[in-house]
Length: 328
Image (cartoon, rainbow, N blue to C red; front, side, top):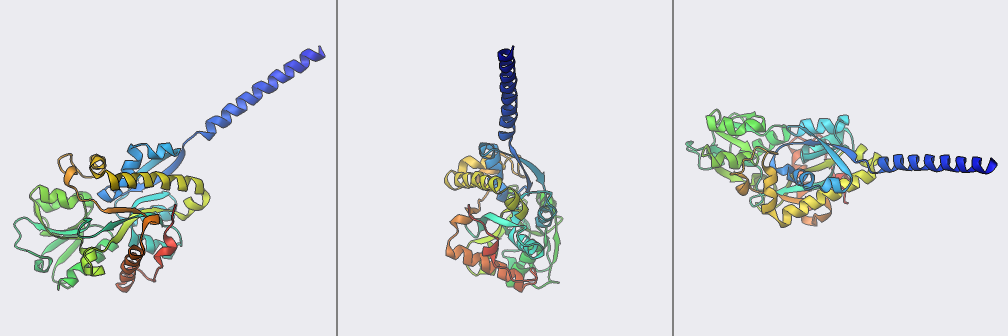
């Protein structure tokens, strides 16, 4: 009887161990949840690529996306803890956040834009007589939303001899840019891709000039302006460092795909941004880079851009960009 009791006890113990192990195994393989704020413009392409090609899943991550339009909304999400990652946060907005709450926006990747790698641009109505930005005196101009975009638009206009009062500038939600320009509600626009190319392709506008921050702020049309990128919250990095590292690894795979097989990734713009299948093949790309791949010149240009924002009063304090960049 004693022997049978031991066998019974051993059987119960083995069954308990199996149940416990199964529960632990199920927990171990549960995907880590990461909340991502997404601005649906072409600069958010690495997020769409990583998600739809299964790179996050490969790293045991499941993302939950929230569409947030403009830098202030994304920054607010990071500060409040409502999102862990901003897929495409304007760097000026991010640095403003870091002044308020150091480390709230730490960039793992940034997007270079200039005359070759096009993002921001001035377009004008197809029938408008302007041949250059300097010809926009008296024009009613729409701008991409957010303080940073408004400030850059004004800076570029000023560099072309136009002071405030020479034009009317209103910020407009990105989803309304094409329609507003096509309807003639505005004469011109400081807009972002893909809205710029879509409006041109529809015949609603003509491109006046792209890569204008590099040209008029950095003084070099070929210099990379790092105006936006992927930012992780400090709390996410500190509290879940392993998940943050795996998220960055998936992001890097997406960036590598974009850099080395640009044509194959364009399909991810369709449905994820305001891009049709007809326009996707011609949407300009920006220079997507992981922070670990930035050159000394890149870092210098990045700092110059942020210093300009401080000089213009967009940033209340000077910010050392290297303090809010993280390599993986």
